[in-house]
Amino acid sequence: MKSTGIVRKVDELGRIVVPMELRKTMDIKEKDPIEIFTDGDSIILRKFSDSCIFCGNNEDAVRFEGKIICKGCLSKLKSF
Image (tube, rainbow, N blue to C red; front, side, top):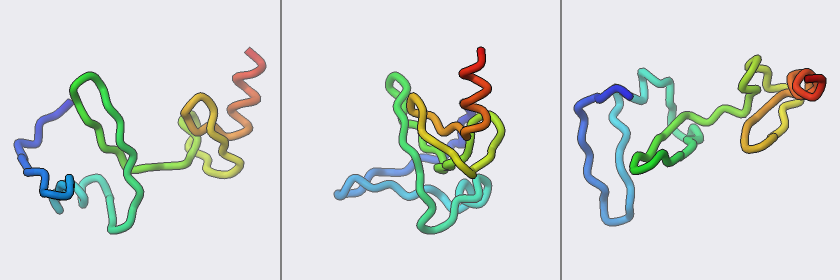
């Protein structure tokens, strides 16, 4: 994990502002969905993508074990 050196306070409604520099770097635009994960005592924010984790295809994508996988890659996995 890379430190940005940026610190933000949580407001009274539990919100934080993601700095514009980070939004530009990560190509996050207004109304983009963001996924929230936890890893031990860390909170991880990631721009949501509903495309296949293997090939990046977003057509015929399905959720499998918490991951998005296209039907083509899923059939390849089943053949193992």
